[in-house]
Each structure stands twice: as structure tokens, then as C-alpha cells.
Image 1 (cartoon, helix red, strand yellow):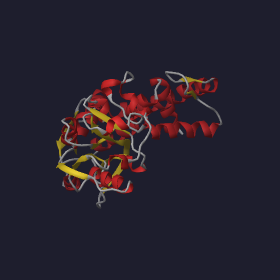
Image 2 (cartoon, helix red, strand yellow):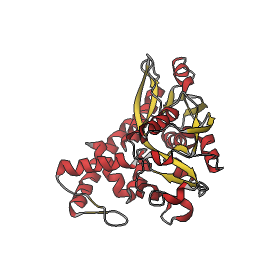
Image 3 (cartoon, one colour):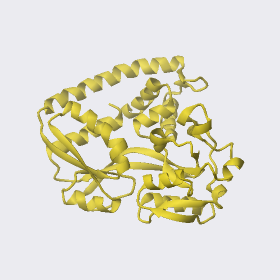
Length: 314
């Protein structure tokens, strides 16, 4: 119940489903589904979605008034127990791709160190196939990854979710025929929120254009291939790369279409690309935090609890 309440309250604070989704590390479709579930549970409509920005209905005002009181009580309780843990010192190390380091971990470190200044948080940039071994060897303590890690001694928690979209160079003629589905930051006034307002399109529309892919062995490669397969074609891959950001830069340079995570738009939306939401359930994927099942230090467990609180919106 509390998680759903925090999701609704975040939409209220941001006055936007897309901004709330970014803050909560979830995709906008997942957030919308969660809010609709709350509305269905109570038989009410909390948000008037016909206004810009979204506004509260009378029932929504009462819900938010009550939610403030409930969430304040829980926040006070969590803060009390955190105060009991102050004075801890030591270090923890994360591992993962450069994208997670630059765009997700930085916010966690900043917030965590404000409450636990004596705990050092480090980072190692690693390939996805290196993560499990590094965790078990205690060279790192936590890892962010979208790929599934099934190794004895390692467990995980869902950190968030994201949507995979297709980035196509603006120079490709196909964009002219798909204007109703295309989002291009260079010629739209509503910012990156526009991607969520476009009509999804089947990947089959892009069967004739060249693609840039990440190499085999990671989720992005497998997922991209399956999305194309579901649409009835094999993509014409002209380049394969090791990292998602390299692939993204090659797409910006006009080499080919590239599957990217939607959060890239919040960081580096390029007017040299057109972005498309694809009509395939495989475009939605979860982000996981992996860590040792047993033998964690008190410092590790403190940071793990902190991240759980952050994910749940405390």
C-alpha cells in the first residue's frame, strides 16, 4: 500500500507522469498502471488527466491529504532508525556500466553521503559478464544491471524499470513517412516529454534501414533481435559495439538506427535523431541491483536499506 501511495504522491508533487517516472526510476507505462490500480482499488479518480499539468480531483485532494500524514509518520520512523546507525564507517563498491555510474549512482551517492558521511562509496566500470565473479570475490559489493544474473550466492532487488525506444538518424528518409509516430527534439516545443505522447509503431516499419547493435551477450542485443524477429524480419546490422553510449553516438553520427533506453533522452536528447516508441511488450524491462546473498557487512546492509527506502519513495 505504501509503495502505491508514494507513486501517487510523486505524480502529485511533479504534476507530471513523465517527470514522476524519471524520479521513481520506472517507465511511464508502469507508473500509469500503478496509479490506475490505486484508483480502481478505491473506486475513485485521483488525477484529472485532461489538464496540463495534471490536477487533482476532489477525491484526489482527500487522498493526497491523507497520504501526506501517512508518509510523514513512516518517514519519521525511518529517520529515527537511521539516526541509530549514525557513526558507521567503512566502504562499499558498486560495479556496472558507465551509464549507470554517470546517471544513476551519482544521485544515490550524494544522498547517502549526506546521511552517512563516514562511509565511502566507490565504483568500478565493468562489463556485464564480469559482475557475478566480482561480487563473489568481494571486489565489488553491488551491481546495477538489466541482464539477469543467475549465480548461487547472489540475489537481487528490483531498482526500477525503463523503456527501450528506437533512435533513427534524422537523415533517413523513412522519418518523412512516419511523422505521426516520430518524436524529434529539434522541431517540437514540449521537450522530451513528447516521446510519451507519440503513437507506438511496429518495428517492422524499419526493416529496410541499417542498424547499430551492441554485441552478443547482453540484454540489449538479445532484446533488440527479438523485437525485430517479432516484427518478422532480421535487422541489417552494419556495426556492433561494446557499450550503449557508443552505439548511441554512432546513431547520432548517422550510421544507423539504435535501440536506446528512454532515460537517455533526459540526459542527451539529440536533434540529430528521431525517436520512436515501439509496439512490443519487450520494450519494457526492469533494472536490478545485485548483491551477495549472505555474508554482507553492516555497512553494506545499511546502504541496501537506504536504497530500498529510495526505491519505495520514502
